[in-house]
Image 1 (cartoon, rainbow, N blue to C red):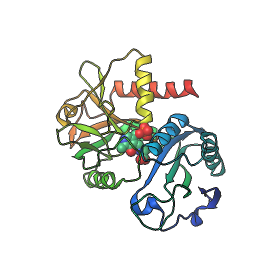
Image 2 (cartoon, helix red, strand yellow):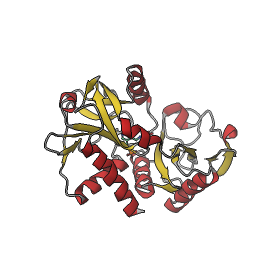
Image 3 (cartoon, helix red, strand yellow):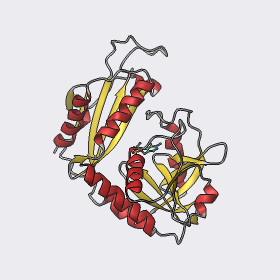
Amino acid sequence: MTRVVYVNGRYRPYAQAFVHVEDRGFQFADSVYEVCDVKGGAIIDRDPHLARLARSLSELQMPMPMTMAALRLVLRETVRRNRVRNGLVYLQVSRGVAERDFAFPPPDTPATIVCLARSLPPDYAAARAERGIAVVTAPDIRWRRCDIKTVMLLPAVLAKREAALKGAKEAWLVNEAGFVTEGASSNAWIITEDGRVVTPGLSASILPGVTRATLIEAIAREGLILEERHFTPAEAAGAREAFITSATNTVMPVVSINGSAIGDGRPGPLTRQMRRIFHKTVAIKE
Ligand code: PDD
């Protein structure tokens, strides 16, 4: 089967899915995106992802390139045409193509819209969740609007590279005050000795994760205790358990930080419970 990619109104064969060299996404990272998990052909938390896309666009003074209904259709069609049952769907919108100039192009410049879908083995994240992942810390060198989901991802790329060189899957970014803000491509969580679930509160320093929001709903529904506050790498190293959340990982246990084991160095029962209640909440919402 040939993979196809949605590019500006057309479904193109993968090998011919091009964007112009003067695309503002390419030249200025003037572009926003979303990644949704696909499970059994369903796009998980589709509407909250689209709502965040709309917010990212609005924060950058870009108009919605099409209606929400049309965007839903593009996501669905891209998943369908690529026969993705389990995997991800990626949607990106840039300010369009214009001669290189820092100034915004004329307002009638059409946005560039790209959507692609990819299959992943159905047990891809589940198998990894059985083992858990290692994280390392890295300085948070990103800009001050990390709440906007832009493709300006070079700091994340470099942090992930550092992590990979140290045998870790994710980097936890640490701000100048010494607190963990979030992962390079995930939100960061710990569980304290007395079972409180802790994650940094929303601010311009972190992305408001859709998985984070759904898990917070699940935590409330189960009557568990959530604390939205900062924590340091040292607190994380001494925590009972730790984990990350993101669309494709959902809830992924963290078993070590900077080489030091968290708890007994294996995914703990509370993190497993987080994973379970997250999936239960998603199933209820479907
Ligand atoms: N990343 N924080 C950052 C910096 C992220 O890039 C992501 C997601 C998250 C988690 O958000 P959500 O739960 O909505 O996926 C937090 C995506 C998956 C990516 O860039 O591939």
